[in-house]
Image (cartoon, rainbow, N blue to C red):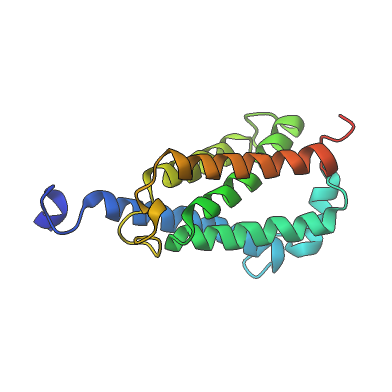
Length: 177
């Protein structure tokens, strides 16, 4: 235990902290994707998710439900294990940016039914993981982006926000707004 708490120990507390952060956030997001796709743990499944997306202006809603579910499932699992971390982070930033935009235009920042604060926090965490790096306990540990930096963070931010903007501006709920 002392080795975890001292800077000169074999294991760094920061790497353990990043593992816990990645695992918890990644698994929770992956489970949200599972709910959208399969409804094994509650949630709407594809039909319920598509109906919700249609009510928020996504057209066609069913393909967007599939993409959102797959993005959350794959992006969450990749983040949890630290695999292609900048791309996993970009996936989460993309779906959470859509969630923020739809939430802000429908219920606002704060709401008893869930406001924009949760997706904002998840998106910020995803960018920060890319900026800091996935840590020693990740599948990316030997990759050039393993130590983080501005480039992986910008990849996550630009790809995530860019993909969300494309959906929102061309085929999503903000068309015609």
